[in-house]
Length: 168
Image (cartoon, rainbow, N blue to C red; front, side):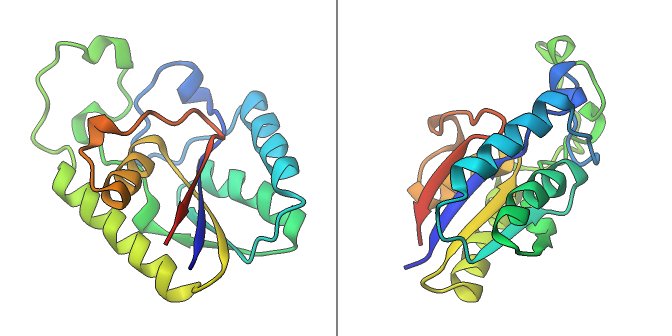
């Protein structure tokens, strides 16, 4: 059985300013760096065999802080990228409350398909290992929705630098 420790990246400047980041790179702010360091410290006594990450900078930066404690390299994958918010990318989130959704937003079906591919990849590459995987709020929600066979709204939101454990 593979133990997947699913993590949301640390807080970014855009998170703090309520900007829809989507698949932009993002940059951890000081709080996000501290969150990642605290998370790394909390995992320091655990055996970690691999650290995976979305290929977006904010997730990679979080994963690198965790990986250093275990003397591991970070393996990146676009499967863990955040949802593509299309025309909403870069917008101030409170302004989107009643906005009409543009047609270029990644569908829930596509998001869940990526999540399914990611879970299969982890199970295939790391059987009977413990893997830390750093993703983003919505893709992590999709991973959990697929894992638990639930609808996305049924999965509680993950805070920055929060960890959820799944057994594959």
